[in-house]
Length: 344
Ligand code: 1YM
Image: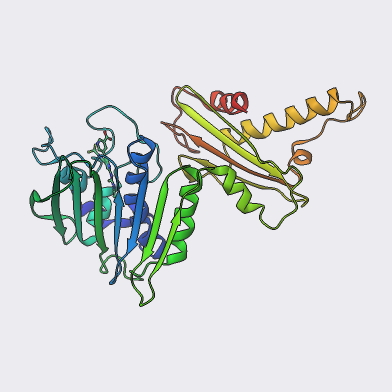
């Protein structure tokens, strides 16, 4: 369970130690804040690139629990940040649906940082703990200040360790902005702010989309001639799995179809995408027949036919997603495909 393992083989946890891996650190911490938003306790997340390329991630959720964890006899904050694989489901209740390392990424980020600080705002107190040199605590979690009783949340600041990230420790503003905007589209009503304090002229963008994926489709079709003015939107939930679909046709011949599960792009498709595609083809064919647009002897429209000029987002939230190659659980692929189809 030691963080040394992460420092020995960082690639196993974050893929690469290049620029991509560096940004992965931010996504791991942001994922924990997103999970808190998905649980319904947080509606605002801030990401700040500080001078010197440390990064701060703030949320206004409940704050990471500060009580003593029964197993480790340390605070839950310290446990989440120093024990590999902690932070996921332990303690029971609730599930994590965001992507990344399934809520266990905090300790990985700490292991790969030269220093990291956590502040938790809870019960009118400001709790603080600092870690150095790959996750070693500098003292215990302690109360350093008082705050308004109504103020709750978690603030984490970390500096990627240059001895691990030898290629670069400099963040790319556009990389962060693009993904944070995507997360704002995929989580409607969630406010995400990005700030860059590295340069004389400070940059700041706020992403909040009350229309969620409808506004995502609007952006993708910007500058194109829409066929249906009003973007079609449907959502539904079954067996704890929710599916949202938004689409609009434009006069192009190509299609833009992006699907996501738990906020992660599923660019190779999947059962959620199959179910929606199948339903769209079935519904358009059935309408075309009943409206006598398709005569009895005509061939049915194919999937490719009905996707011409289609811009569509499919977003699935699944408590226990299965990716290609993973073992199947209770709900098999066929069931998920059927739920996606039914919801549509
Ligand atoms: C800036 C990063 O980590 N926020 C965050 C994390 C947690 C909670 C709230 C939280 C979760 C739960 C209960 C729960 C985490 N808690 C844990 C653990 N932001 C950030 N906000 N209370 C608070 O899941 O039941 C791991 S992450 F394990 F302690 F519950």
